[in-house]
Length: 112
Image (cartoon, helix red, strand yellow):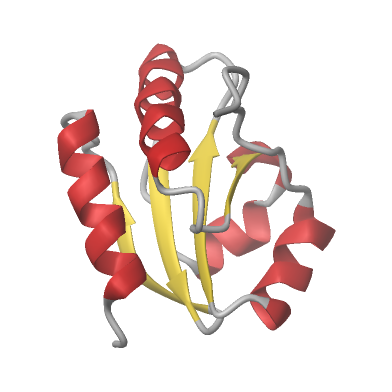
C-alpha cells in the first residue's frame, strides 16, 4: 500500500476529458481557505485509498465556475458522483469515513 496516497488535482481540461472517457468518476470540489474542506478531503482520501478502483480527483471550485453552475453546486465541500458524464449525486455532508466508504462502494458497484 502507498502510504502517501493523495487525491490528484484535476484542471478543467482533465475533467472534460475524463467526462468523455471514464464511465464512473468521483470529483471532489473545494476551496483552499475552507477548513471543513480540508477535513472532508482527509476523510475522502482515506476512503479512496481503500477503494482504489474508483477514478477520483479534486479541483478548486473557483477554477471551474461554469461547470459548478451547470452542476448547480450549492456549497463546498462537495463530492460529485458522476456516471457516463452525468452527475448522479452531490454529497455535501461527509459524516464519516465509514459513511463515505459505503456510499462510494455502492455507487461503484451499481449499474444505474
